[in-house]
Amino acid sequence: MKVTIVGAGNVGATCADVISYRGIASEVVLLDIKEGFAEGKAMDIMQCATTTGFNTRVSGSTSDYTKTAGSDVVVITSGIPRKPGMTREELIGINAGIVKSVADNVLQHSPDAIIVVVSNPMDTMTYLTLKATGLPKNRIIGMGGALDSSRFKYFLSTALERPANDVQGMVIGGHGDTTMIPLTRLASYNGSPVANFLSQDALDKVAADTMVGGATLTGLLGTSAWYAPGASVAYLVDSILNDQKKMIPCSVMLDGEYGQNDICMGVPCLIGKNGVEAIVDVNLDDKEKALFAKSADAVRNMNDALKS
Ligand code: NAI
Image 1 (tube, rainbow, N blue to C red):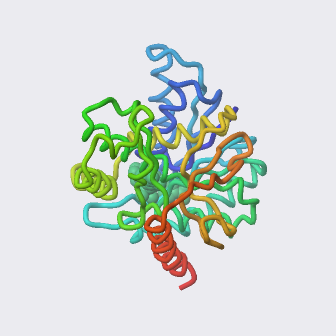
Image 2 (tube, helix red, strand yellow; image 1 turned 30 degrees about the horizontal axis):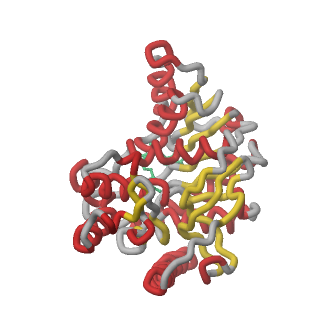
């Protein structure tokens, strides 16, 4: 199984690293317009093979898309990341051009690939990729909900003082500081609602911390985060390549689901070898439905910026 990652920066290279050491794919090709950068990242990762103990073949190239031929999955992380104080939405102009040309290039050599869009503003970049390529909607998946949900579970586990792996929770909606919706009502600890263990104030704080989780890290690091984003992409790629049919919140085109049309935003999906194999209908209460509709308005405004 072959994966191409376009953009060998912080997120792309971390994703390649996780895919390799977990043996998720047999081959990873990294591409980056910075001369020699992808080659260097690939060589550095390959020099872990004997100490970490993996057999994945990782290679890099500056612009030779022929090396990506026959990829099963293509991940697009090329673009500019946020700096402190920036919103994801402020990246739209530059990243739209990059994402569109990258999608065109990869599809010339991997016409059957499933494309995972990571570049921000991710929901709008996913929508753009879908419209620009004309691919069926199951093959274009925006990654954001996997990351936001892992941050949500981290904050829940911290509040509960319990291991994160015993916590279940999901973030849906847009992938933005004000548009994402941590579903606290449905979160659980070892199968029991977290509301049995945490006060409403504590739950509200968890939700608020989750929503600014990316911005908090950008403030601390001086640029946006990469370990959890890279690992979240690898988690999604694993479910596709190995047909795991995991339920992962992803940004996908909605055709009436959750009351929305002609928009890509985060909803729970079953992810397998065909990409998005089903959109799962979670029973939202009225408050959550209203938040989802508000989030959709914000994502739609962002999509409109593509036309201007
Ligand atoms: P980075 O700056 O470390 O890496 C981006 C790389 O893309 C750079 O190495 C750059 O040379 C390369 N690049 C730019 N244009 C290119 C092109 N046309 N072809 C090939 N390579 C190109 O940035 P980082 O931190 O890896 O973030 C990448 C993107 O992912 C950003 O837009 C960021 O906002 C987004 N992101 C999205 C997340 C999500 O959950 N969806 C989470 C974290 C970051």
